[in-house]
Amino acid sequence: MSAYLIEIPHPMDKIACMNAIKIFLESGSHFLVNADWGCQDGEHKAWMIVDVDNKKQALQIIPPLFRHEAKIIKLVKYSKDSFGEGFKFHETKTNNPGNELDISLS
Image (cartoon, rainbow, N blue to C red; front, side):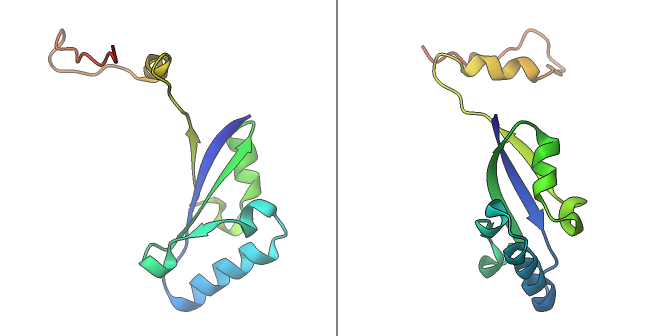
């Protein structure tokens, strides 16, 4: 399993905000009931971190009404010994080949 951060925005007007929270609380999902909300600070989004096998499973946790705007981000932790592994997924696009950054931790 992997950890995924789910970010779900909702409209900022009072009724829409209350409705979003109500839908989450009534969903019966442990994940949704434990979502963190940014509404009181003007950030009208809910966040949760879930442990699932893939993004498709993470999407299924979200109420259908909110799925189209949800953002699902796979979370990865790096250690001093393995941090370079994460960069294999990046494509180097540089206008100045040969100007590589030294990112070693030694």
